[in-house]
Length: 146
Image 1 (cartoon, rainbow, N blue to C red):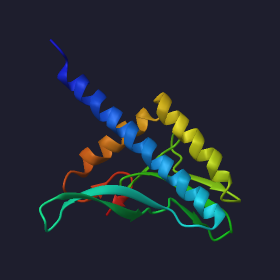
Image 2 (image 1 turned 60 degrees about the vertical axis):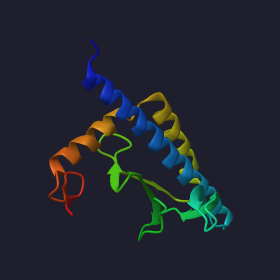
Image 3 (image 1 turned 90 degrees about the horizontal axis):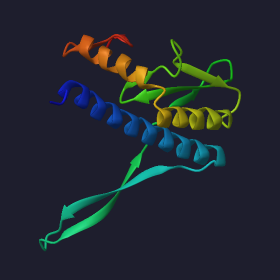
Image 4 (image 1 turned 135 degrees about the horizontal axis):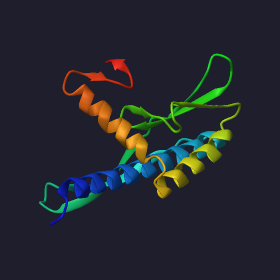
């Protein structure tokens, strides 16, 4: 007999890794375009039924929210997000700072490699525990009261 709890956790953990890796890749692409002074939008294909009854595939352009900002002291800071939650990239560290935007390229590549290896699986446990604590009350252990 299979342990369904372990199987369910493994499936959810794999989805967590895939989604986080895709988000990091999109942020890396967005960062490269921002360094070049250009804009980046994610293109997905949506299917819609036309008036004639045929199914058409239409491009859907979506703007991404960047994870970095400029601090008051002139440096740049970045956080890793999963949905609207901030994820720690190291135990207890949520924010990474750099003097230039180009400094985030190595950081994002390192985080993508860590996700592929399964290093931030403990961040998934932090994320899930914050969701369980929050329930439906709108409270998160990562943010305090929303």
